[in-house]
Length: 320
Picture 1 (cartoon, rainbow, N blue to C red):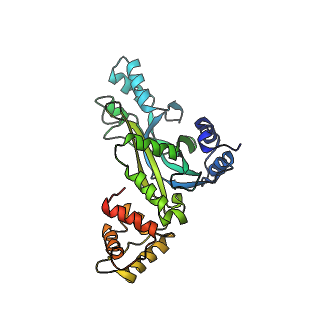
Picture 2 (tube, helix red, strand yellow):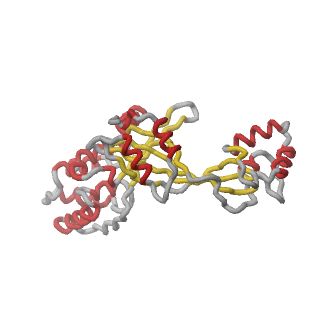
Picture 3 (cartoon, helix red, strand yellow):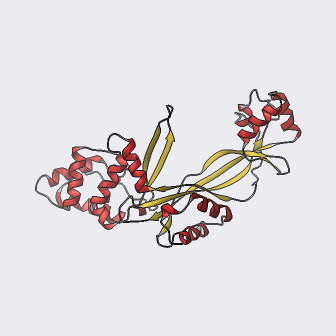
């Protein structure tokens, strides 16, 4: 199978996730994705922070009652004649336990070209379900259905695993198409679009692959009036932390250039200081002003392409 990442159907990825049992690391999943796309390099780019969600319902013996606590509670409440006490008695008689889903989102990058946006992003959740609490507090009866679904004072139980850790396919994003969608949904140039364009025309884009240090996380949802809201954020995924670029007050010429060069060397590519200034707090915006004053005077240590990017930023600053 020698397909473009955009042609791999989500159902194929979902089936792969269902068949794989996670191990100590995610190498087997990575190898499976790479086998589906042998013509393109695939790598696990970033692992998100741990998240928690409401889970399902089991009994004391671990037998599954429902996968979705919210759906089960609402349906069973109706089956109980909309009598909350009947539902409470039912939960207590069967010693029902609410579970909790915890997990992390894995972000796989499929590189399809040389531009910053030339990749497909595959998001897969690695989830684990555990006992969380008694469905109904032993000492304090719930006053409404919301207190069964998400109580303020739960009776917690030991966090026993319910089944094995598993993978769940989330979504696939063809990034060039997504960036086009951002352009269509925003009247002015989106900061992420500008960041990518600046990267592509700078020395950084000529020497370094964007996705080795940065990631675009897309978001798309429906607004309160039914409108489609399309957005994105830039995430720094570098594992080795860089030091802050020291205060540049009063520095210029070779001294200033030396500090910038040292930062770039630590980052691993030229003009890195500019992008860490636009995204993050490692480099102060005053740095750009100091360099701009230098190149507007007697110094010319920036390549022409980087000087053009800097001049545009000074004329119209932005952050992402």
